[in-house]
Image 1: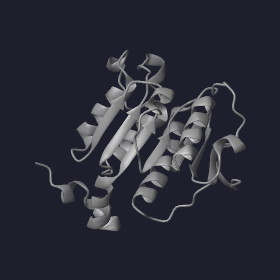
Image 2 (image 1 turned 90 degrees about the vertical axis):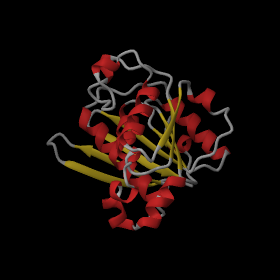
Image 3 (image 1 turned 30 degrees about the horizontal axis):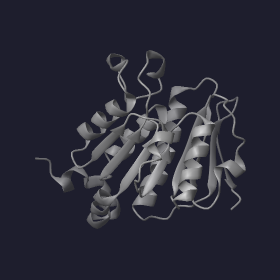
Image 4 (image 1 turned 45 degrees about the horizontal axis):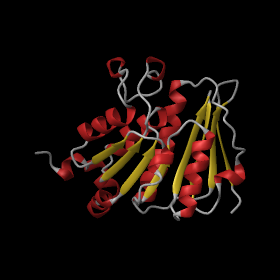
Length: 225
């Protein structure tokens, strides 16, 4: 049997055994099990969060795999949320995950409570629906989006997503694989700090990008409340 303190040794050295054990009581919902969901599953799944809820109705296709690191070619046709659930649980014996193969609209009708909801979707209407549901339920949620060589992250508490972004059915343009992991990692770092009770700013939009010369830039914007 794997020893808890040995498995989480480096994190216990970082913030202590009590904080690490407190993560076992946290419940996190990840909406979307594709690119961002895969990266979040890897990073947070092995960080000791006690319970994950994964929501995604889609199946794995070959065109997804280059940027969705949870999946292999042999997973084609399988439901993303189920594959990600199995991966998270196989990497960390102290974590449980539940997969819901359904849309967010269907999922939002369930009477479930979470310490944090994380957006890992790829379209604006679903993010607007997440925003509305979280506002209605006084739920803090973590937004993330990627496109080309840039992406955005925000931990929403009092600000409204719909007040900042124009909601359309537009799909993102091409996406470089590494930027998905960059943004997923930024989301995961903010999430773990929040869940561990460390300082983290809310209602700040983080914009990460690479310019035409390949230089990394990061900008932050205060959102209206």
